[in-house]
Image (cartoon, rainbow, N blue to C red):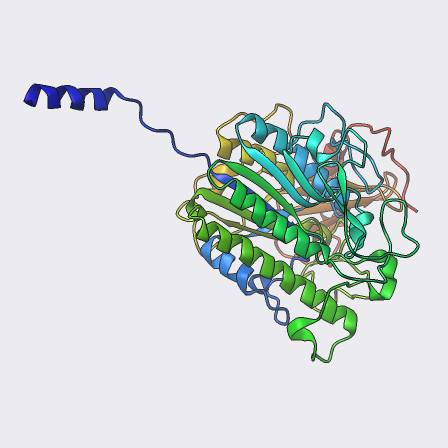
Length: 452
């Protein structure tokens, strides 16, 4: 018997150790949520208890950047790991990703993940090569077109590549489904939140990547001053505020509510410890739908809003939660951005990231280890001309058109970018100017047009 036990013990020692489960990855992104819109980032009037709790259970980053100051290019940066000087989609024109573009979904799918998108895509339209199911996602539910996504009570959403008819009625509906509903029955954020919970339940026993791209608190631009579409104002109904501000506050609290549903589902399924959750916004706060971002100080102490390349347009909240892996209750000033997500996700999946990316893996920083920051961050923006911005260490350079002088700001001592110090630092200006000469590749879809 002792010899048999010894043989069994020897075989056990020789057996390969079981491989650790690859973590589930959830990226939650609000739409037009400002740096100062959450309680854990200083907001005093809008209630966000679930996100505040998520920050206390994870790490809150103070220097995280969106890929752009508007929707589509920011999402392209997130998906491809290329900044707006190299990515294919650099503005809000309706351009579709190409068959050869490599997305984070494709990388994770190849690494054995089930991949799903719920919400707003904006990188490929019906019948094109850019639809999610042709870009690495196993399933998709939501809006393909960002103009369609303005409408919170649409007549249809997309499931994979097929339209799903809803009970809402939209008179004078636009060609991609945009408009303002006259009969409001089904609120799209509720449908998208339900779909996300269903995806988590269906894939709880295998590694999954869920991209949860919510449309809240974006305005329905077609509704103009009544564009903050929400079923009710909830806890803000009796506030002495203008209706658009009640709507914006209720939208942000609804984002918070839906984050709570996701985190609760992870706990209920027993996969909380196996799941890393990121929460952020695609760009700074909007001034649409009758809402004024100054009302709630939505940019915090930062200058600018959506469509600005100053900090308020591109610096956004970032909370990362992964129990026992990412430090709880930590505040980090590590500098990173959306272009870093693809290589970070590849690192989480234990696979290689594509070559030639602008991003680098932030996995060491998330796990509390030494992690280098990139020396330079770059943005370009193509509305009302050609605009560029560079962050070089604590310096921020902004230029409107190639012929105008560079504005320079010292973020360490002037976070609000109030004072242009270019004249006092010609050496820094020269270094940024030299970088701008090589920061981008030419784009036929987004050529340089001098700013007005």
